[in-house]
Image (cartoon, rainbow, N blue to C red; front, side, top):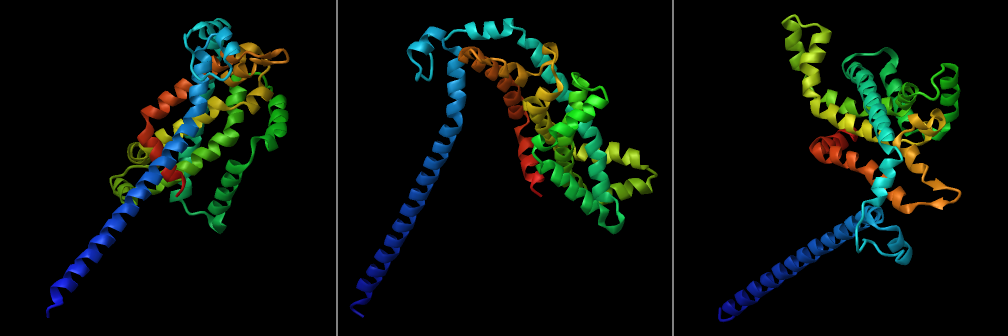
Length: 297
C-alpha cells in the first residue's frame, strides 16, 4: 500500500511522456508537411516568377545579369513591342476559337452524357461507346494529326478558324462527355419522374431540370475545354497558315527564330497568354474543384 502513490505517480509520468512524444511527432509531421508543400509551391511558382521578371526586364539588364530573377528597373518596353506587332489579333482569334470550341463541345457532350446515363442500350453498347470516348481522350493528338489534316483539306476547312474549331472536337468532345457523365449521374431521377407525371417532355426536362442542376459541372467542363483550346499548338500549326488567322500559341512560337530568341518579347507574350486563363480559373475555382472530383468518378 505504501508503494501505491509512487506507482500512481510513475503511471502518470509514463502517460505524460507518451502524450509529449505523440505531440512531438504530430508537430514534426505538420512541419514536414508544411515544408514539402512550400517546396512544391516554390517549384511551381519559380517558372512563373522568372517569366514575369523576364517580361519586365530591360534587354541590356538581361544581357548584363542573365541569372537575375527580377529586374532592378522594370519596364513595359517588351509589352509595347509585342502589342505593336499585332498580337491583339491573335488574342482575339484564340478567344474566338476557344469560345466556339467550348460551345460546340458542350452542345454535343451534354445530350450525349445524358443519354449514356439515362438510356439503356442493347448489348452494352453504352460501355463500348464509353471505352471509345476514353480511348479518344487518352490518345495523343500527334497520332491523328495527319488524318485530320487530310480530312480538313478534302472538306476545304484548312486555314480557317471554323476548321480549327471542328478539329479541336477530337479531344474537346471526349473530355466534355467524360466530365459531364459524373454530374448527370448526380441528378436525382425522381425529379425527372415527377416532371413526367406533370406532362413534361424530354426537351423540357433537359432544359428546366437537368441543365440547371448540372450548372457547376457545365462551368467546370467549359473552363477545362476552353483552356485546352486556348493552349493548343499542334493542330493550329497544321491547320492555319495565314498570319492574320494565327492563334496565340502560334504567335508566341514566332519569337523563336533561326536568328535567336527574343526572350523579353517571348516572355511578355507568354504572360499575356497566361493571364486570361489564370483569371478565369481563379474566378470559377470552386467549380474547377468539383470538376476535378467529378472527372475521377
